[in-house]
Length: 133
Image 1 (tube, rainbow, N blue to C red):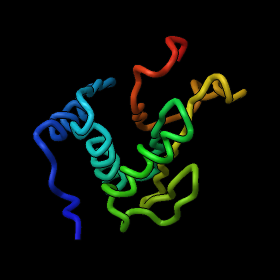
Image 2: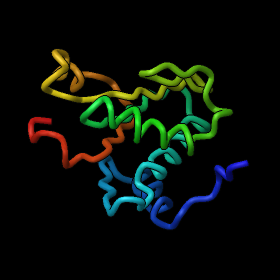
Image 3: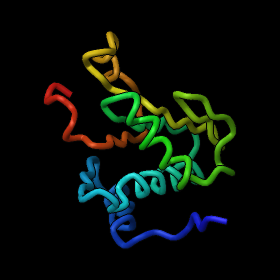
Image 4: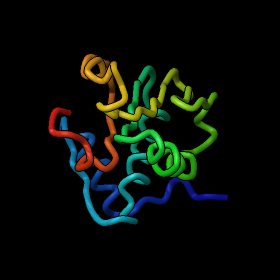
C-alpha cells in the first residue's frame, strides 16, 4: 500500500508557501516532485475543508490526461474520491478537483476560465502557456 503521508522537504515548503502566500511558483527539473506536491496539497485541502473548487490545468488535453491526471491518480488518496469522471473528481467534504486543458487554440470558452471561482489552481508546465493566460 502506498504511503500517502510521506512528503519531501520541497513539497513541505510548497505546502507552507501555499498557506501563507496568494501565489506560489514551484519549479524544477523533471521528476522533482512538482505534480506529486500539488496532489499532496490538494489532498490536504480536500481532507480539511469543505466546498473547495480545485483546478488542475495543463495546456494540452493529451498531456493533461496521460501525465498530470495520471500522477494525481497515483498519489492522491483514493479514499478521498467519491466519483471520477474524465474532467473532474467529486471528493469528500463537498470538494471538487477539476482537470482543465486550457488550450486557447481549441477552446472557444478559454476566456471564461478567468471568471471561475477557484480555491486553488495548479498549472502544470506553466511555461507552455501563452502570455495571454
